[in-house]
Image (cartoon, rainbow, N blue to C red; front, side, top):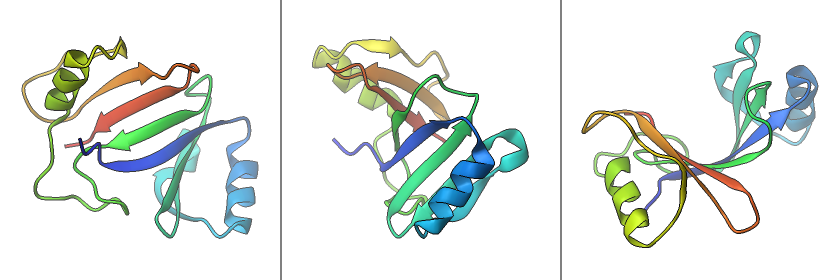
Length: 123
């Protein structure tokens, strides 16, 4: 099962301070809008999202339809198929897709330790 691009979405208290810290580690902004309290940063193939006031805790994120550096791929498993497969494997969902048959959608599952996993398809 290919879940797509992996990143960590960090719930931060001060987005400017967090951005400055991660830039010291070599991360560079590739997306987002700091005035809207969210940024996407890359360092090689590593990706983090900084989100101030949007999530209560950190989230593991997968993006079907993107490769390791965030480029769109031609062929990928649609998120609705991923949800169906996980449901067949008795994975419990915190939220499910309630959307049309194609296009952007997301769902959330939680691992045994309470870590949220967001699967978020953008196209």
